[in-house]
Length: 395
Image (cartoon, rainbow, N blue to C red):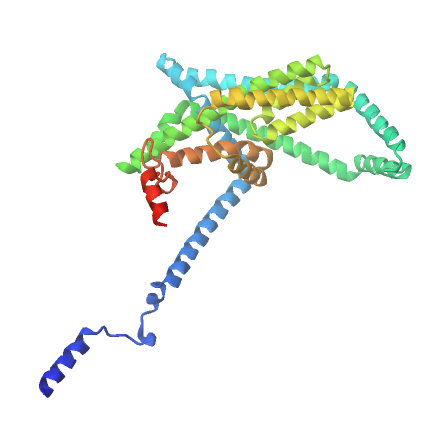
């Protein structure tokens, strides 16, 4: 019996797992528990954030190249149907590219010339009316039971403004303005050049980028490219149509109310319409301020009513029909995208933020198939009502 017990205890000792002392464990085993996996995930997140910060730094440092490149890509996507139509009708690539490019440049140049011409033509009248409006505001403040501004404060502000205009600081600001104009001209020339090659050799460039991909990776890359071109093109064309309708409607209202600078304000409405939510509000405020200075507060209120009416017609009728499913983004996402774009690249960033965000969301929607989003972005299937009621009764 004693021999049997010794053999049984030996078997029991062999079956039990051997526990190594903590000092003899390999160092990498510390990453195997839950806290170690959390540390690995944190390092991965930090690496992703570092790469994203590097990309943002490069974009901000090379804005003279990245901004024209992004605008050219979006414009090429918008005019891709026109290029395809010309190619189907056997128009040579060079001729089709020149026709499309000259049309784009003509539209952009025409808008710029219209703003400059209208402002220059009516600037003197608007300046005198603005001066009269300021005088009326000062006279109105004198009739209040309390004093907002003293004559000494107004005189001091006027002297400060005069000293600034005649100082070297204003001259340096003017030089900075000249530098900004030079940068704008350089960026515009670069934009036209890049757009020319995108329109002419865009399909060949895309096929070159697809060379490293094979099988499912190539099919996914083609879906992403097709979806990106479709989303960006539809966004620009739909937004431009809606903006044109808004500009014409507000222009008619401003002309009826005899508001000065009606044409440049309408052009400004067209341009600001490319900034969702914020652009329409800013355009309405500017138009109301001009009407307030020029014609009084009654005209300003009527301008506000016209702007609200046009925006309501656009938001409830035009945009759902023209934009369709292109812009399926929540208002909160649009506001966050606008804030990030503005912080990175100012007004241009605000214009580009929403279409880029829409393109990213479109890519997610076709990540695993033509109509199959990525796994984490799919909607959860709804449980049958019978199963839900059973679960409630069990609870």
